[in-house]
Length: 128
Length: 128
Image (cartoon, rainbow over all chains, first blue to last red; front, side, top):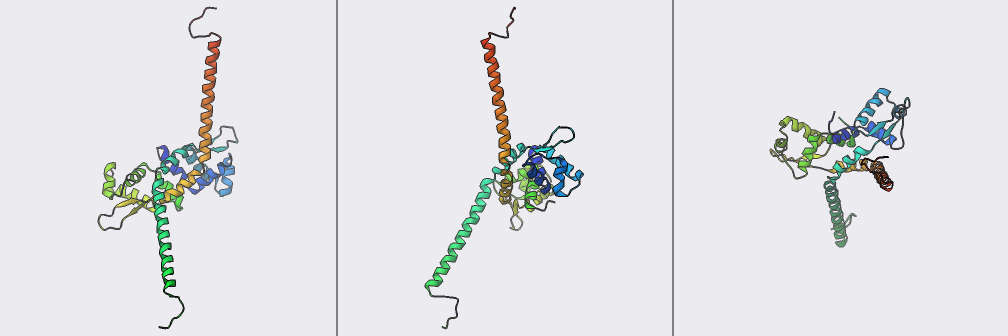
């Protein structure tokens, strides 16, 4: 199990079922049973996922007896967001390079088309 | 091993050594040996971490023979950022609630201080 907060947050997010549980809880609190239903998972399996989310501080289980609903606590996601933001310039550079490359490609395609039109070249059969 | 991109990205980030490797690579490309040095880890351990990062698409190993440096590829972090951003309003609400609570607390502390001053109460000993 990860010991630092950031590792615990990322580990909790590294599973599609746990992300689906968080998405469901973003609409409002729910019981373990209600959370298990859409996934066709056993209650112990869902409880295991909930435990990981709870240990990461992403969900809180209410102390109300019997009904004990779970609710989202997005607090730890702030730190995760700040971590990822530090790399923003890298992916922006990457996608801007890709964008420039595609623009250049489009430009040279247009130019070659233009040159073909100028010289009267076409794809139809020509006799020399 | 996680099969979807987002799970692979979050799983790769869920380890402080791997995050430190990414931080080092954000300063420029580096060899496996250079990456291993600051952590006092064995080359096989570092290689294992690099493999996780590589499979998540967060680093790319150059094909230059012998020297094969690694470089950062922040592309997958864009999707992770977009995922976390969806929860922004939840943590902002949470911190704004905390902020309001602290403001209210400060206000009532000030008021009780003011009331004490008005009625001439003090902490010194008074005789009835």
